[in-house]
Length: 232
Ligand SMILES: C[S@@+](CC[C@H](N)C(=O)[O-])C[C@H]1O[C@@H](n2cnc3c(N)ncnc32)[C@H](O)[C@@H]1O
Image (cartoon, rainbow, N blue to C red; front, side):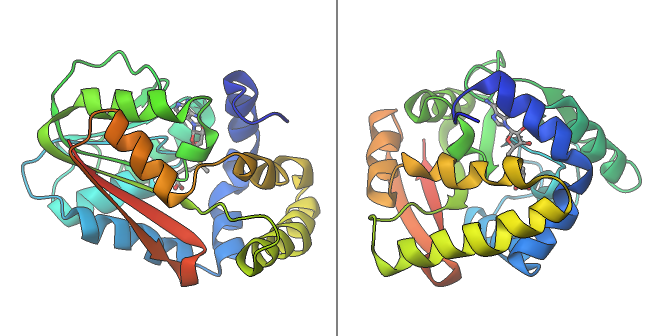
């Protein structure tokens, strides 16, 4: 599958939705929970603020936001795939039923401008067909001074040690295990989506060009993951 093809990406996430959380735990040895919590800690959302979780998937980040803010009243989770959204809704019903789950495109949300105190995107940026437009839309949604965080895999220089480690991890761990669930082809997409994914430095530049005032890039998981933290 070609990265950036939004319709195929939507179909792919709908297809893997029922195994998505289990596979995330297997592939990261549960560590994705820690990385996601780190993003929340850096962004430090406060009670009463309004936040949006773009490319929310099955809702991990929206639920973490609600836990941190002790309320789910002002949280929106947005994703283009309906099946993942229905899992997110189901998960949030008991404790955080006021999270609003919206089907939409992170590149063109059609939501009013300047309304959010904060925005985040975990493992979503890589899937967008246009990173620059993604940052511009994020900037448009935020109030001046609002914060945003983008967590994702990192892309590396070809043949660097980290690149080789990532390649082995994806080719010899992720894809074979996904194949046991008949999802090998779908998970081989991660490697393709990293091919032209911007480095931390490039992400900072794209964000600043999109209008953000400040941008910093932080490393997680021995540098395998990166977090772009920006201010509107
Ligand atoms: C790898 S999952 C990450 C889900 C969740 N944020 C997490 O960290 O567990 C990427 C999600 O992005 C969604 N997605 C991809 N492109 C999108 C777009 N243009 N607009 C909205 N959602 C998109 C997919 O449907 C999928 O649920």
